[in-house]
Length: 80
Image (tube, rainbow, N blue to C red; front, side, top):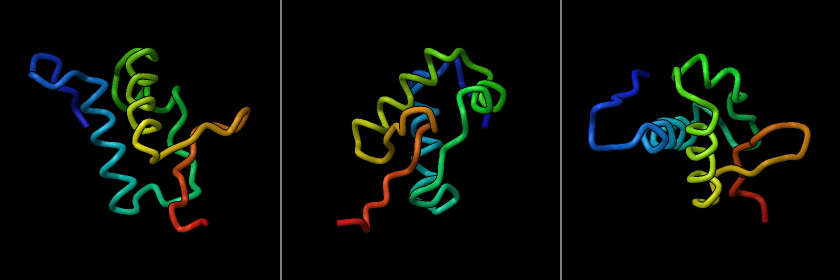
């Protein structure tokens, strides 16, 4: 994905939207770890702070959660 740095949507929001699409379409299924910060830095070409903002958006939406020492995982909404 190419980040539009000149557009009206901030880069962190573009990344959050891209990750949300991947979660919703099953590319990143429930219980699976999203790419690491290092992997996303390479994929999106942005600073780590931008990636943190993007993951905070997804956490706020209840789509992902941090597992200490393991990474950020897609929440399994099918769990009680």
